[in-house]
Image (cartoon, rainbow, N blue to C red):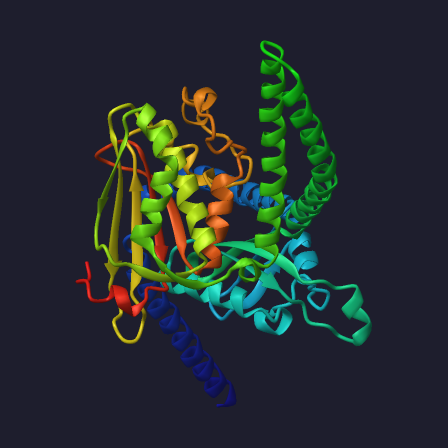
Length: 439
């Protein structure tokens, strides 16, 4: 009886197991039904191709990793700084040059920290935010004042003039290239000091030479005195160059100290300058055409503003074709934003000469810059007795004088005449001028 029960239970268990296997096979059959023998054979045939594709993908991944490492090494040893931040302005990476420029001794590669915690520079932070908001490359220059850990670093860590160029990257990231411009500025300052010292040393011997030449002029008869007269012109040219350089250096060091501000009537001043230059203009049959209000008053140094128009009108006379007119257009501009902002006097000087080349325009006001020979050597130069001697500093001095008055000057080519177009703006327009209608 016990054996019968045992075999009966065994039979039931085996039957239940067989039933489970049958159900499992049916289930697998339903799942694997789409995989026919044909597709199975095709899969076997495709397996080597898949392996090859996977190997190619792995190789490309390795190549990309190698290229990425190469570019990172190049950035790391580049002569300019580079840093990259994420969408939350956390510093992701920077090269060795950026670490030196920004004094990032507290940052280690692989460490992610807020940039503002490492570099206390509002200008840099604002540049990054602006680049991310506008999704556009930006450029900015400012003086960077590093933070100090202790008082001992004050004598060793100096402020730097930096120029940054930023570009937007995917996922809100921003990359910034940094250029340390301080060495260049230091070289320029050292150069200017050297030239100024040299100019001071040259002034006395040049004055002595001129006295000797004046003595010879009174004692020599023609034709020998022709050479002495030529020597006098060259000495005067050197004296003018030295004086102009010293004057420019002083104005750059302290622009306002040279100004004796008074009320100046601009129209009368321009007429006085033209009267001085009129003998030169008559040789070429040139005329002055003025348009604008007659009663224009500004707060300025009369001697300095006279010097500005003397230089600009003299240049226009030198480079204007015979029988043409030099146009001076004056108008008062109302402030764009209204309110209590003062009006601005704009004066445009336009000639009909050759104008400036596109390559020269960005450098017009640089000292000693001599651009297109067609404009720097005019046929009238050799015959203009009493004319202002060109030394490459005239327009640089003009710009410094106008900047010292809080104004601006821009050099362009006029679209109608094709000649040089100087646009000057003075902010200190006095009440006497405001009876005229704003333009």
